[in-house]
Image (cartoon, rainbow, N blue to C red; front, top):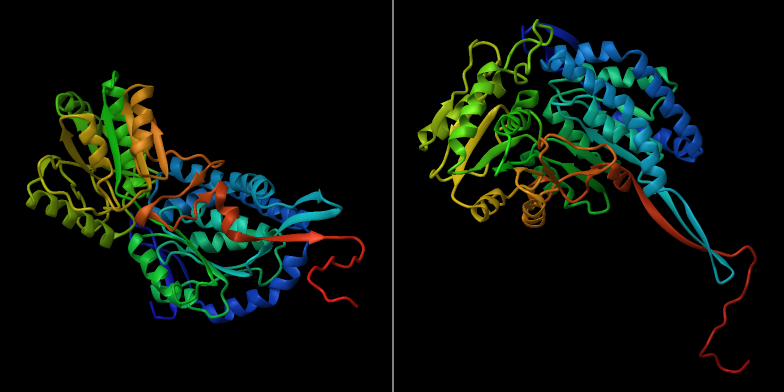
Length: 469
C-alpha cells in the first residue's frame, strides 16, 4: 500500500476489505465552504426531510451496514446490528433535540418581539473513532447538518469503509455536493483537517491524549468551536449485592462488552473485602464461559477481537505491567493466536498495589478490595477522568450518596456502565472531555444562539442628558 492509499483489513483474518485514496483536507474544506450558504439558507423543514431520506436509506441497507461493521471491527454480528439500528434511530432523536434545545423562541416584550434563534457555526470537521465507526460520527454529523452546518468527515484510518458507506447513504438521499465531504487518511490527515484555517469547529471522539493535543492546538483559535468526547478510567463499585450472579453479569457486560473497547467500559472493579470471594467466584466462572470468536461464528460470540494486532500487543504489555507491579492474576489476558488480535478477558487483583491512572482500551479489568464504602467512593474518584461510574447493589440512600459524591458524567445504578440513553446527555468531566456533552446535547455545540429585539415599525429612542434644542 502506498502513502497515497488507505486500506481496511479484517482484524480476524488480515484480509483487505476496502481500499481508497488519501483525501485532501484543504480541498474538502473549500468545497464545504462553497456549499455552506445555500445549505444554511435551506428551511429547517427541508433539512429534516433530507435527513429522514438518509435515515430511510440506511434502514434499507441496514444488514449490509451491519455486516460491514462486523468485518471491519471484528464485532459480533448481533452487536454490529445494534449499531446499524442506532444510526437509524439517531435521526428522530436529533430532530427532537434540535427543536427542544436550539429551536426558535419568540415572545412579546413591551411592544417588541424578543427572539432567540440559532445559527450554524459554518464548516465543521468530524474525526471519527474505530470502536463505533458508524454510530459515533453519525451522532455528530446528523445534528450538525440539521443545524445548517456543512461537514468534513475524517473516519478512523482503521475503519474507513464504514465511513465511506455513510457518505454513500447521504449522497443517495440527495444531499447536495460539498455539504458532507469525506477525507480518508492516517492520523496526519486528521491533524491537517483540524488545522485548516477555514474550519469553524471540530467534533472529536477518541483518546484523551489526542483530545489534549487538539485542545492545545485550538487554544490558539478560541473563536473556533471544539467538542471533545474522550475516554475514562471508569470505576464500578459492587456493594451489598443481594444477587451475586446478577452482579457478575453486570460486571462482565460493563468491562468486556465490545472487547472492552467502549469509552464507558469499567476499568476498575471496587468491591467489599468481605464479599469479594463470592463475587470473584461467580465472575471468573462467567468469564470462562464467554465465547471469543469471529463475528459470524456459531455459536455466536460474546465478543470478537480488539481492533488490530498493535492494540492487542499494547494491552498484553499493560497486563504484564500490572502483574509486574504486584497484581495477582485471577484470569489472564490470554492471546490464543499470536498473529491475530483475539484476547481472552483478564481480571487482575490489584488490592494493595499502587494504581496508575490509565485507560486500558480493551478487556482488562482491575479488582480492588476495600474495607468500607467510604473508601470505595474515594477510590472511585481517584482518577483524573470522569466519564462513567456505576454502583451495583446497595439501597436508595447509598446510591444517592454515590451519585452525589462521584465525579462522572454518566452514573448508573444496577445497570452496566456501558448503558447510555439517546435522549440524555453523554459526556464526562476532567480528562474525559471539555464540558460539551454529546447525544441529546449535541445540538448545543453545532449551533450558536442569537438574541434579537425586533420592532415592526421605526421608533426613535427617548434620549436623556441632552441640551435644549
